[in-house]
Amino acid sequence: MSQTISRPDVSGIQSEIAKWGLSSTEDRLVKRMNSSMEEIQSFYDSMLPKLPNIIEYLNQFKLADLEGEDLLLSRAALAMCEVDNAVNKWKAPILSTGIDTLRMSKKSHFSDRTML
Amino acid sequence: MGNADITAIPPLGSHELGTEAIPSDHYSSDEFFELEKKHIFKKTWLMAGRESDLVKHGDYFTFYIDALEVSIIITKDKNNKINAFYNACTHRGAYVATESCGHAKFMTCDFHGWVFDSEGTLADVPSEELFGELDKSKLGLKPVTVDVWGGFVFINLDPKPEVSLEDYLAPLNKSFDKYLGNKDWSWSYGWRAEFNANWKLLVDAQIEGYHVDQTHRNTIAGAIPGTNAPAEVFPDSIGVPAKISAYRPDKMLGVQTDVALLSAKHGATSLYTKSENEFTADDGEGVLNEDHPLWIFDAYLIFPNIVLFIQKGQILVQRTLPVSADKCFWEVDFFHTGEIEDFGQAFNSEQGRIQIRDVLTEDLYTAEGIQKNFNAGVIKEVYINRQEISIRAYYHRLMSAVKGEGVSK
Image 1 (cartoon, rainbow over the protein chains, first blue to last red):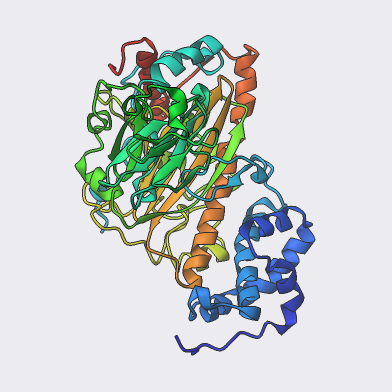
Image 2 (image 1 turned 45 degrees about the horizontal axis):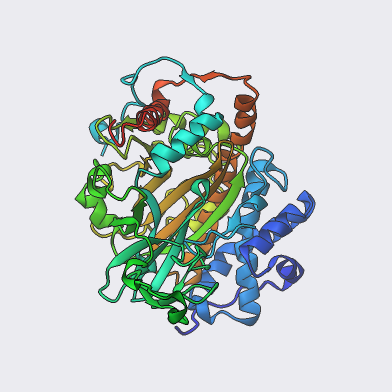
């Protein structure tokens, strides 16, 4: 697909994108759990105004074609899903009324019985 | 629009199975656990895997029943038939398959190299002459009863189950078999965890709506009010004692965040935000309650250890497997139709998956504390309201099973 939507200007939040644009959900979870609320809020506040345009921009490409700075940007956008509850519901980096999320080990397929 | 008959939420439940308190010792007693092993895990149909993981001749996966220390191999043979065997070399008992899944038209025991084909036949014995007279035709892998329903592979350690899988799963009829068995479903992701709790406590946590408002006060409160999660029981069913359903409120309550609303433009992974772009789903007639504008999902309890969540275009399977009376493995798996191709879909998947994950951490939060109170004898009975009737139906089915009456209710 050809590019028809311009890349949003994220130059002012590049440091936040670099810090949170981690490659996996698990990495972003650990980042959230190990961050202060101030750090989480700073990332969220800087990303949120640009998030609709970022999603719209990235959505014009095939997922598999994302690379370089766009891949980093996509991962930072996904990190917004990780911090959303912390900012808007818990007002804390970690949910106090649930088990430790790290106890939930990611499976690789339905029949995966490997454990931790 | 505005038709009260269409938008009415079903009654929350009933007291048709009684109102008495339920004893708690079946969650903590070692003696009771031995009965469960004997009468349930050795006698009932157990979901072992997914048929789509057996595409071609030689594909296999294994299924381990921790409580019994039994490993099963499920294979696809050259005639496209699915077989199940005990994962035990008939020479001296070593595992024949050591991976959770793989591809091998011939499986070779790591110990001395006995070779079995995917029909379980003993195909080769190294230095066979050392055994003298060896009748290989009698030394195939020991078979296990297997059947497929809805694309899921079930095994039964009873060589001659008293009921067929199809009969066992009634009232989940052929419509469910067809919908769930659609080849387009593919495994997307899943999690697994170990708990110091009885395996049934983690089932209980998913089959009643009474807990929603309190347990999930920090996540989805308002998105699925407890009053919108009615229960229904199937007293005539052998393998499906109950179900609960979830409906949105007429007006979404609680916190609908900017991130959730952005996600909702691109898919329907999250159960807790009304999507602008729903999953597609073929053959859902008689399965999906799409006529109800507020319906989200139905969750069926499949005895003994499965909660099967069915919504349009998404299936969640929660399985628990006991290790002992107060220890178990819990897992949940997601199936979707269609591949994620663009970033919007990826964003929706990530957001929905994280929301469900965080909600599950709440569902799983209470079990270990409850277990300690049961173990200590502090709590000897529990009280069940009509919205929790699924718990009572589960208990009744459990009790009938451990009486040694086979599958009879």
